[in-house]
Length: 640
Ligand code: PLP
Image (cartoon, rainbow, N blue to C red):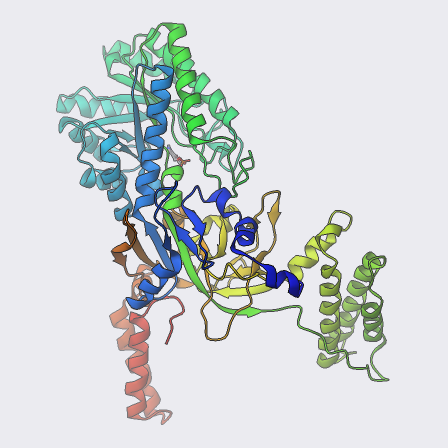
């Protein structure tokens, strides 16, 4: 497809532009002179770089198979520092009198290692946690030590949840109960009074402001969570009646995740700040304004208000928030509150990369051998062949229509027994030759011939790859979220093929055929021709947020191996943690099988085969051993 002179002139810089790595990599990912993707933990000049291929080689040496989820500790550290410093700078610049306290929403990535590292790297900024369930509160309490950090309890709360939160408060944690539904107030007050504690309470408000993007339904009047203004007034009145208004200290909202447009963020802060000032006027103690999550990640690097992007920087986000809150408070002559944000995605997305190898490729533009057609060849096939001979720039549209027509005609004939399988195969091979010839006329014609885009997709290769979309990048399937995907090596070579990526779940939805593009969404990705006896590795980047948590066991592919590295300032890196992925036995037990019983059953089946003289006793031993080994193996494609 690509001219040989272009193939030979290709450089790492050309790959950099093609895959847009500088646009979405946030400085953490680059391409080195060897044509490999590198990781720079502290973006900036003279930053240390580690090649992902070096990491893969270390993973292989340790006997681990692909796919592997690679976590880079330093990136998490950098992202936590980045948001805390951006708020610090905004506060200093705007002479804001309050503080900033970040809380990490555990739901975004609940893995123990991730939560522990957030607590460790966040301690110097008193970065706390947001929990939305009892289990998340229990997890957070096993890790959080910093009493200056906030612990925000969202979600529906039963007695046990409330009691645990109250105990946390008693032990000195800044634990807040956010009232999500009106009925919660009564229970919180009852449990707190039994324990003799004044609970720290907050209310979650349903803003009228809404944000664009995938999660727009999280905000607005019809959002599921939160209280409307009349319910908030009811809460205030009930607290007043019981002389407990001093317990109301926090106002919270969450507009939705991945808010691409800064205008939406600003307008929500304006509305919430106004409500905050009114609550102070009502007599509530207040002191904390919690703006929820929503700080977006620029997955496609376009810096626009497209749903996979954001049209603002973290600095602009922080400045806008501080400025809006400050001016609302000053207008109402009210003390500046502590600003809380619950950013999750922006903190953990960059931290993880999914790495996998390609197992095989299916091509659709295989050269058709243009042998002369037999005299008695079916008329429709002869017509198809004629279309192939007459393609030119001028006849593109006509040839495209004719090819479809004659191809379908042969299919119909086949259905009715009027053409053979061989004839149908011949027709389809000529058809694909026509399609790839049309596609060679290239992108310049796409505007006048929109069907060319479809052809390009139809003739793109399928790269069968060793991973499960449903387990490792579920949002790509569920909400068509875009993630940056690219080869992690061979970037000094021209990627001469176009492909889509299929996983190994054998589900027709188990494929990635939407890729980032600076102007649009692309339906195929430029990839390299596979080389014999050489693995080809791809990376899906920015998968640290939500993907691990939402992943499922489709086709019983389990958790992948996880490897964490720490990069040293002077170069080099350590493997700080290796977590083996699920075995077949693990995933089967998740779906109620008992692996021991399974072996017993299988032994019985093999014994029966001996009785039926199908296998020997020796073969039985071998078969049962293979079965047991299968149970203890990795759920993904294993190398011999
Ligand atoms: N806070 C709440 C209440 C949420 O529901 C969520 C997730 O949607 C977040 C925070 C995290 O949002 P984000 O990952 O966009 O920062």
